[in-house]
Image 1 (cartoon, rainbow, N blue to C red):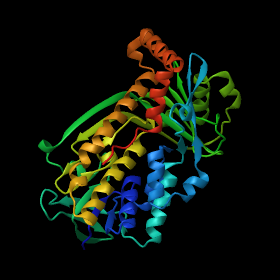
Image 2: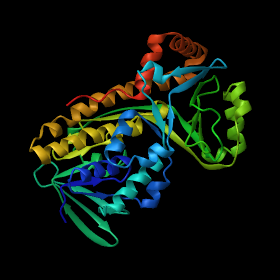
Image 3: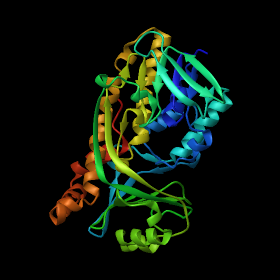
Image 4: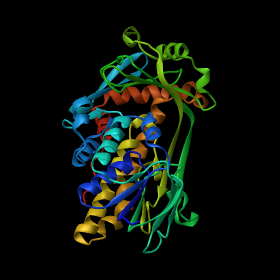
Length: 393
């Protein structure tokens, strides 16, 4: 087999890249080690920046997003028992974010790929990348008992943090930066109306809490828990009881509880790999970086990676120019590190760090008070939350 771009991974970054390349007339094949059902079953965040919304529209799959997504113009910060609204739109000349679940975006992209008759190998085993440091890269894998070799011009590694692409890079050719946080997020998904029209980020002495949503009838809530905690330690009743202790009185009055559709604990980490290009293989999305979910940047960073990478491929095939591909890593990393900084800062400000004691808690409260009282500080938060602009070509 042969294709122009072999894409490893059928998460949102791989699927979005494949769709953009298809629209530009560039042949591509996607190889995914998990089944399609497994990919759709993964529960992930869904706060989309304008950059991501624009890219989804460019890919021609934005109709359902606009019909069902919830546009948000602000967020609320809860500390000291009181909520304070950050007016994202007013502070950023009208920019907004949209609540649209990553699972739903993945579903839209999978459907578009299926409708176009594009080749995707799900449940692929023993995926290996070869020759990316030369002129003839290839991918080998097994599918339905058959061995396959896919020759290609380029490989796009969109296969996540634990994927094969980054792991195949020689150790001396890559530098990895990582910070592991001493806590995780216990998340609960329920078919209950959201407690608030906008997201509530809560800083409390008991730990962080987040009230999020997927739709007007489906809510997603999170609690900061120790890394040693287990999901089985938390009944639904125990989760709701602890959430109430971290919310204000008005939110508690409005909180509608119900049976969980899903509960899980996600560890928090910051991670960046440099560079993102290795010969004819490029890393995008979680394969190259991870952010703690506090700043809602993971999916959006994957989208901006794909925007830069797709531009590079389109320039290569339509203009015979390698400039976009040559500058991909530098351009993508410039935006990645700014998002890493924001996510690290927001995480550090909103979570409880027991080792810092009462002094650390009071410092957080002082910073939060300054944040909501200072127009400049609120603007800085809003600009980062709605998404920094993409670097020009």
